[in-house]
Image (cartoon, rainbow, N blue to C red):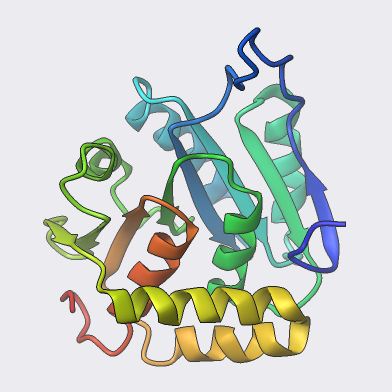
Length: 219
């Protein structure tokens, strides 16, 4: 089964590969949204993401912590008519950071974005954030949750190694994954709006870079 652990996953059917072997549906950006009791907000978020990324091939990965309000069921209903949506219903290691990391394991985009499902984050900023990464201007882009200002961050070798270690520990087993999640959650910055990186390590590293900062500010 998937490396992210116990749970279910609904992934859209992929079209046949092109003659050169490439996947014609490979998204430029995968937007990962961790959810818990967001059944009412999720359809609104999905619509906002599609509008904001109308000119960018994208997918949406919903990583739900088996919400009592059945957010995962709403997500699956949306996915039935929307091939860009992948749904994960998670039964283990609950928490925002663990959900994001799980979402990264199934994301197919060359660039990853993370956004909350509570509708407090401005999805319209995403295209510019993605452009900054795909153009090579930055490895990681974050926004100030209060002003929406975009900040560029280059990743240092030591931090890359730390993130790689965290991801490796998370994939090893649920126990280590929980420890990695706790490390990532410690001091998490509530002011971060949306995070974009050029691969799974970059997106996870962005979250780590925000840890320990004051609300509404970047490291």
